[in-house]
Length: 114
Length: 115
Image 1: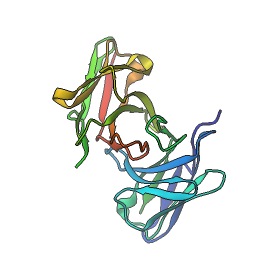
Image 2: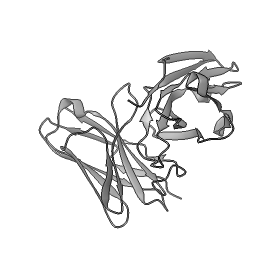
Image 3: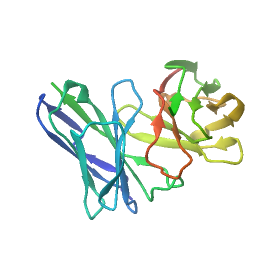
Image 4: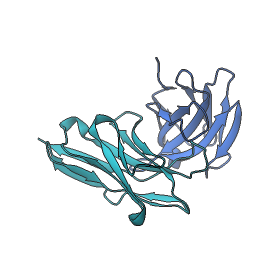
């Protein structure tokens, strides 16, 4: 049973560029959330997708956008990259939005902006 | 504002010694609380969770945590640490409103285990 898979594992981009990160949820899960983990910090919630719609959003600018596909996989897009966007981006999936379906995390995509 | 605080950035213990990692929370009502572990280059793995009921929660890998409402704490413990426990540990909270995804994480405690 495959867990949460993310691609690519590492990425290097230049300031001002755009990036797309991808996530496939754990089998049987239909809800995907994205987190940003800066170096030495805990993960911070970006947004959550369920039924192909953004359901919740954290304190991130509109440069951060996402999408969920009918097969429940998801993409995170970041436009006009800033140096401060360098971080580990974690995708997490769950069975439902309820509290009793804990999050399962992928290994993340390490984004470096130069 | 809702927050989770982990006062210790870095802790070193000897293999076989006991471990306690501290976590304090600040929420309007008692939140749901979680402990996650992150090994280098890996995602986060759930160790245990507290929703309600028994204040002593058992988790995987021999970990347990105790919820203390009077101290707004949810400390993680292990009686005997193994070298493989070296990792980053995160405490996280969630308002008890039934939405699982929007966890608030602490800044983490890095555990080093000496042989």
